[in-house]
Amino acid sequence: MLTLCIRYTLDSAKLADFEAYARGVAGPIERCGGKIVGYFAPTKFAGPTNVGLSLIDFPSLAAYERYREALAADPEHADVARRAAQSGVILVEDRSFVQRAS
Image (tube, rainbow, N blue to C red):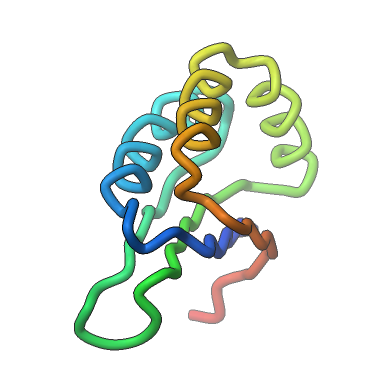
């Protein structure tokens, strides 16, 4: 099992747009083969207020590659991504893979 970790640098004045993005991509991600662990928005309590995270599980790297192809062809995902791009909420996306240690 691999977990895709996406770290988002966000416009902290547009966190509602990030929350809308997170809700909107859930269907396409699951439909295309990813299993969402969660999307996480920043808080004002501790840490940076402009960093969000998403964690998405895949059984293998091959499954992730199939997911990427399917997601690129998904019209609902394209619409959600377009709205996020237009809003300017996501400034940077950093992707990495992690695996569970326990």
